[in-house]
Amino acid sequence: MRLELQKRAQVSTLFSILSPLLALALTLVVGGIMFWALGKSPTGALYTFFVEPLLDVWSLHELVIKAAPLILIAVGLAICYRSNNWNIGAEGQFTIGAITGSILPVLYPEWHSPMILPLMLVMGMIGGALYAGIPAFLKIRCNTNEILTSLMLVYIAQLFLDWLVRGPWRDPQGYNFPQTKSFQVEAVLPEVLDSGRAHMGIVFTLLAAVLLWFMMRFMLKGFQVSVLGQSARAGRFAGFSAKNMVWFSMLLSGALAGLAGISEVSGSIGHLQPTISPGYGFTAIIVAFLGRLNPLGIVASGFVLALTYLGGEAAQLSIGISDKVSRVFQGLILFFVLSCDTLIHYRIRLIFNPSAATAEAKN
Image 1 (spheres, rainbow, N blue to C red):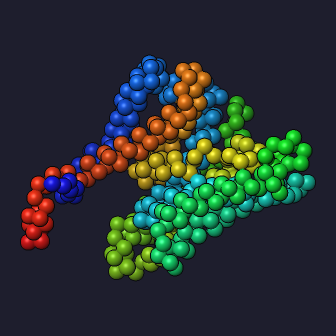
Image 2 (image 1 turned 120 degrees about the horizontal axis):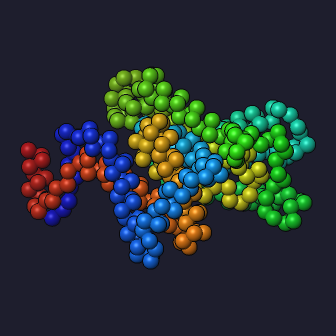
Image 3 (image 1 turned 90 degrees about the vertical axis):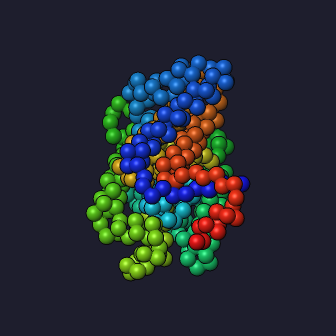
């Protein structure tokens, strides 16, 4: 006896559209049960998670700050996944982008010029793209699995950052704290509004989402991404290069992750330190799938996932739960999104005589 997934001949368009909403509803139900098991009020906990952070201006600014890197990374990952290239190492590319973009304000703190910020952003994108190019090169030349190589490179990047801020880049006047000098004023992203900390990173994010949506919808490159992602053989018949697509998708996603990294450091933190991300690169994978790998859908899903970060921080203070609970929420969302998509596109069959079923399939 075995289970088998059989692809459905016809897929319900309505259920395909409603799949993310169904996944969110299931997450809320299971999350409520989890809070009840922890001895907390389910309605009160969910209110703290998803409603309370929206009630004051300061929280809204913090929501924008957390949503910006999630969306920016996720729109790049969506291009990778739609082209069937599985970049799982955006967290490492985020970190390397932050490091390379910080070279100028850390090593040349006396340089005051309006050119320093644009150069930092460009250097961050180059750093992230080059780091993503490593798994791309290994996939093309050595046929290695980009999932494993990109993931392992995350830990190398994090250890490299930790070594830098504790060693050669440590601020000599920082009272022995493991961090660099604070960036000069010209190296800090300006705020969008005077009412809070939200910075120009959200502008880069929305611009990238719109441009990539336009590319996927109206440009030949977007058509190439879709064709090669669905069938590499069909893409070859059309004259599209799978190797070129590996380079394009990985470098693009790495550049956007690097831009997110330097934007986070320049706009929200103001210096490098051992931890610059609560896991944006990994959470962005959930954001991409929750947004149906559509850049505009990713904008909405990015704010939903950012709300779990902000709500988790509020819940720690108000109802006394662990910060791991917000990660459980994020994991539940991904689990239910993938589960709903699987059940929508496939039918589960229970086969009691596998040999007979195999013979029937051959005939």
